[in-house]
Length: 430
Image (cartoon, rainbow, N blue to C red; front, top):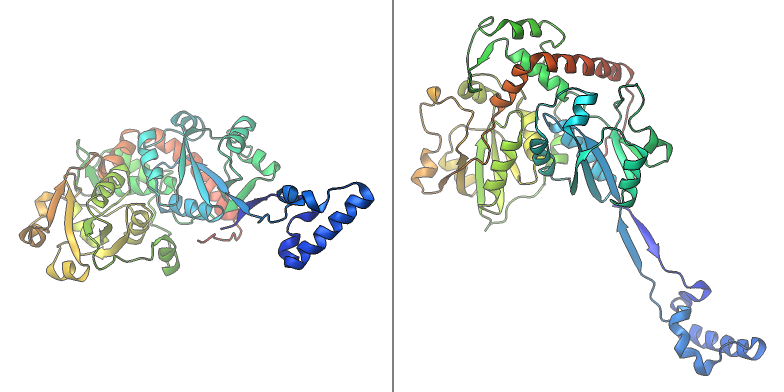
């Protein structure tokens, strides 16, 4: 990637010998001798002491400072669209610094966040393209904060998507960065947003009831409480994913590297729906047990059968979220429920792991999917660092329904305007 060059120049003498060789040295010495006679300059006899000062014998070197770019966001209900934005931002520089906006600023400008600051930090830090994180970043790029970015964090450019980011008074949150010429724009990833995901969650709850522990169970339309039923036909409507998966997008997220023949391949599987901090932490733990982490992502059908309800994010969306995690080396898209001999041999799996917190419904688990790796002595249960699940995340939204209803209604208006007025913007690729 490009970088800023800082080069030392020593006047007209710099680099002369490199161009003229030995003959150039003789000519230069003669000229200096003449300068002593005509101008009282430096004679040849004292010339060697001053060669470094004149740049003779001086090999010019470039000191390259990496281009540092800054991108901020709420990163609430983090999804592959956030990850793709960070990927594009990283492509515009060498080092990506990410600001995670504080809870207070989110509440003031958008409404209550679903995830805590701690959870959002884990998610952002877990993205493979992120080099540094700033906590409690402001929602608006003020002059004071911009100077902090430029002077303390050595930021060269501030990055944001082509969708509008407006303050409560209707002004652009990035106006100042644009005015000073230090702003660059990337393409928004269409088909997903946090607002969209909240809508999907509430829509799915029309036919699914969550118990007091946040676990899903089968239900029928109208069996859940009335407020969810009313909401589904209100401002937040039932909607399907608009994401259009392409092979190019998968390649952009992929490491494009396989394990070496002697690699210790660790395998872990799951739904990884509503990718959250619990997922990041269990993947981190799994990666520490080997040197190549292979993640199996179950199909929508398997998730529906084993979890009791359809996933909020479909298979390709869930695959991209997992691929964006820095601890993941490769994924199996649509992995089988049972870990078989053939699968172990095909991928040269050394260890199969599973966390103690799971989304699956034990009532429908007729057979242990890890029977074979257990019989081979290559299975390990690892303690899940966090107890959060996709269902418990959804429960938070239900518990604060009115607040999220207001938040989504406000955001939906700006998103509708974006889609009506959108123009083509290049998608930056690595």
